[in-house]
Length: 484
Image (cartoon, rainbow, N blue to C red; front, side, top):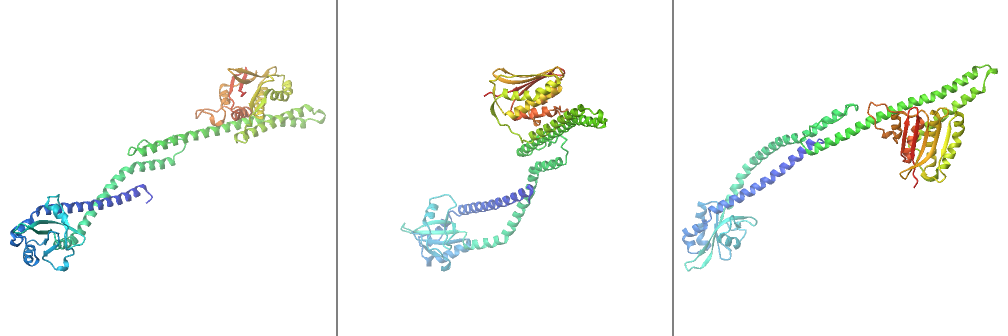
């Protein structure tokens, strides 16, 4: 019963049966109406003829004793008729029946007047032998020899005997007729609705079959439903919506695969970045341990310490990147003096730059007030300057300055180092890994931990970045600043 076909079939069958019963009742009423109309039309002048051929009635006599025998003769000729005489007020006077059969002793004159006036047939009048039902009739006024109105000759068409025989015949034939009719309609309804419901539910069955097939299909394929649901606009729309969802699911699946591949490649590069200082650290320590005590040089320990610091910095950056991707860091925007941040940055990197033979030049006015998160901005500049120191050769220059273009303030970090390739520049401009948009088989660029952190932090601060870089000539980073 949970299947749509079964529920529709059962509902439709019940509706058809109810409609059949209603139709049957309507046909019965219509048949009875037509029968009464025909019978009354055929016997329209019956009472008038009876009054004309009977000498007593033609003289306007309405008494019971005089007419009872005449009524008996008339009813022998027409067993379905019941004959009465009425006085001018409609009271029953004469009839041929036992007195206990008369249930009403007065007939409604309004129906008699309507009949005499030629009203639309059928006209139902009072049945003296019933307290509830009304029947068709024929009536004729009775007039005495002196021209006085003495009453009416009132003839019921289809009297009690007629009803008894009709009820007997109906009791024998009605069950057969009902059984045959209902059986025919049930079989007809079954065949019709099986065909119709099969036709209308065929698109749903196709849709269910296609979805079952897609359930076992691998996500690598372009999943889509075939365009073969033409039976119903709703089913067609549903298939289009499902295809749209499948397309989005496939795109998300491909995006997840690209992100997984990007993380895999990132880990490979990260392992290389970690391996270099770790190898250097172990190498210097081993060299120092293998050397005779009198030949052990302090420079080996210093080199090993520098490698350890590089390793520690990479691990810290890796933890920071993980915190950024997990949403554990949020921006706290405040109005700050950017020169104070740059002074701290200069104190941090000046000794290292001097040791590497690289010139650091920080040129920002004292009045530059910006709205940003000072801690996050400091991390961005730390990573950019650290990356520049790493790839700028001895004798190079790293410059940090502010400038205004079209009423927009920018902070520039410029170096004369190794530079970046075009695909690396485009990757850095993306604010998050989820916004990357590469072809499925295209290799994702790797930025290193520092630049990956820069990209995430710029996304938190909602800052644009403009990058110009040429391999072998250096890079120029422009960070948009909010001054109001």
